Amino acid sequence: MEKVQKPVRSSHRGAATRSALLSAAAHVFRTVGFARAGVSEVVSEAGASVGSLYHHFTGKADLYLALYEEFQQRQQDRTHQAVAAARAAGESDPTRLMNVAARAYLDGCIEERETTRLFFDGDGPPGFESKLRDRLREWTDRNVALFRKADEPVDEALLMVVSGSMLLAVAEVVRRDLDDARQLADDITGLLAQLEPRHGRRDAGDPPRG
Image 1 (cartoon, helix red, strand yellow):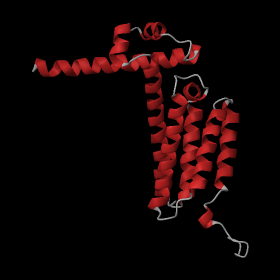
Image 2: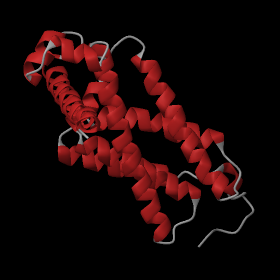
Image 3: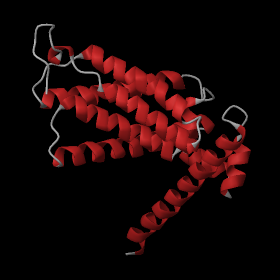
Image 4: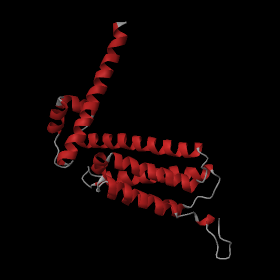
């Protein structure tokens, strides 16, 4: 029985060490920036050893990417919950659902402004900007799925505009104080709400909606 329990204890201890290292890395990166941060500062902040850091991560770039992946998971959870709540309330229009997701993403960035700045201030490991673009494409792909579930044509131009706007919006809201950031998020999502897929656009001779 002891042999079965030992890996469990080891796993719990390892998870705690990993969490402490990530928390320490976030603090150090926010304080001095990624480029100036050193592994020794991270392990000192975490009360861990250099060996334990390299047991869990390959270096500070790996720490940075792990922090980003955890942030993205929280953001994914936020947008999923917001869209699910909107669907439960009767919303089915894919464009409006996309805007619900966009607002939830911006709200998450505002709520975690200090963490979000780590990833949008340009001070990351080599190749990270490419990773940001890849994640933006993944976010766009999830929005495409909203249209496909609704059996509506996918307007890729609209999705590109919204996705590109979101990247710029996030970079801006995290640089403002809380009230200004929320107002900007209101303004951005308000403008996005005025966009509509080209297949749903009125022609000049069509009667007005409403």
